[in-house]
Amino acid sequence: MNDAVPEAAKAEQVRVAVYAHFARTGLAPSPAGLADRTGLPVAEVRAALEALHEHRDVVLDAADRDLILMAHPFASVPLGFSVMGARTLWWGGCAWDSFAVPHLLGEERDVLVATRCPACDAPHAWVVTRDGPPDGGQVAHFLTPVHRIWDDVVHACANQRLFCSTDCVHAWLGATGQTRGYLMDLGTLWRLARDWYAGRMEPGYTRRDPTSAAAYFAGVGLHGRFWGLDD
Ligand SMILES: [Zn+2]
Ligand SMILES: [Zn+2]
Image (cartoon, rainbow, N blue to C red; front, side, top):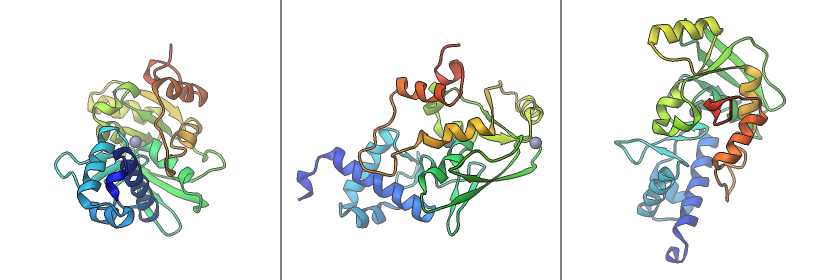
């Protein structure tokens, strides 16, 4: 009967199952688990995962194609952040993704996001809710301009971090020999994360095109070419 289902519909079924599994368990599902969940043969699940990777809906490991590294904002590998709910623990992906997780999880009242400053190793933690940004004078630094993120999405996410202060950002840039990217306060990070992934848990999601993405970035208070906006 599955032959009657178009490939795109099967991919969407698998995508929704991937998100449901990450949300419920904090872990990436296996192709066999996705086959159980969707009723599709494992070979069709694998083909759907490749299609989803191609369309940037999930990120598969380069060597192990059965391993889902990311289904933004969820990740199966450590990228500097943990996100703790009442009963579930997630790898938080980057700063953006970690702050986005509570907005996709209606059953969690709030989550504890924890990380360490990349410059000085100081620990930082925030209770992140859907109601408003957490207090704190820390700053987020994003290294990779938005139009380059998908050149190497794991590297880009791994370099969207939270620091004690702008002094710590500059110390880290000096020590690693990298060029300054974009700095924002916690309020801007929270607003960026709030609706960016809206709808991703439900069937029928379509990714934002560059024009609507740019409008979203401008609407949350981001500026400049780093975000695909005019200077
Ligand atoms: Zn620091
Ligand atoms: Zn990320």
